[in-house]
Amino acid sequence: MAVPKRKTSKSRRDKRRANWKATEPTLSECPRCHRPKLPHRVCPHCGYYAGEQVIEVE
Image (tube, rainbow, N blue to C red; front, side, top):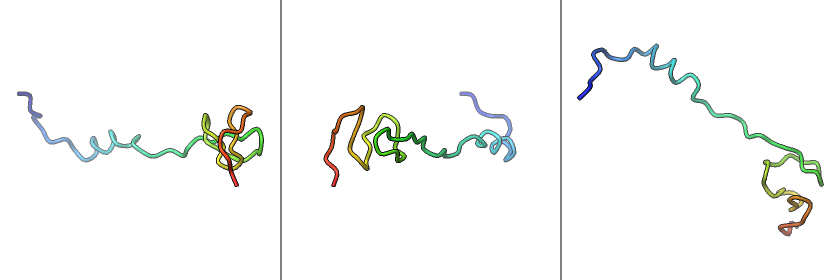
């Protein structure tokens, strides 16, 4: 079985983890109410998707 000959240094380990971070969600503008929403989702403010009302919003 393959076993590392040397311990991985903290520097090498941390360099590998440097790109492991959370990103902000991408938002698009609702064409009907012009508020931010997630792309390819029903707008939570007006309930419209692709020009049709999909859910009833108070």
